[in-house]
Length: 92
Image (cartoon, rainbow, N blue to C red; front, side, top):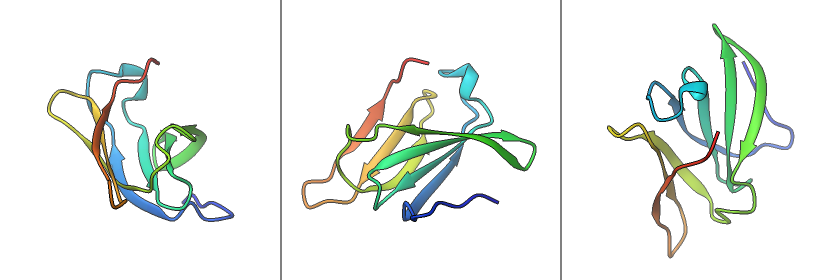
């Protein structure tokens, strides 16, 4: 179990299984509507052991969904009038 105070207004959940970011394999990625960012939760079994906030101030739009593509990249869907679908190729 993991929670945020104040709430990030969670949306979308991805457990990463791809090969593009080997160090992130097994991590959970959670979109934030209110926080306009993505949280990466490092897991140890069913326990969250650390949190990393990604793209804070970069996306600057409400993150509606987080998905993994067949190419192993992570895709975000934003929830704005001029929303977009974006692939992020972060450097680990």
